Length: 145
Image (cartoon, rainbow, N blue to C red):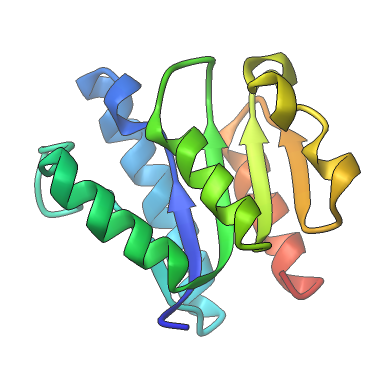
């Protein structure tokens, strides 16, 4: 596998200010994972304020990276339409170890709310702040995630 981790977050839903804030969190997560000698794919472009590439390019690039990743991390801050739900479905179909971070479990689509009860490969955590996400990822790494 080319990547140890694939990080998914719904970039299109963020205001410019929120996007700048989430980039800080994602950079911290990536640095934490890389400190543990892990390779990471995330579609966030840290060298630009641009949020997107063309849809056809994004589909190919992101799904290729997801298929070539061992583990999946989802950050889902609120109920929104986003390709991250599709990506989570691909990760599930590929039986990838996954962690979902959601602010409210009820924001997840119906079939995802109890995914952690159906398979041992998915853990769902509710969070109220970014520190919780970082702390949980650090603990998960220590446990072999």
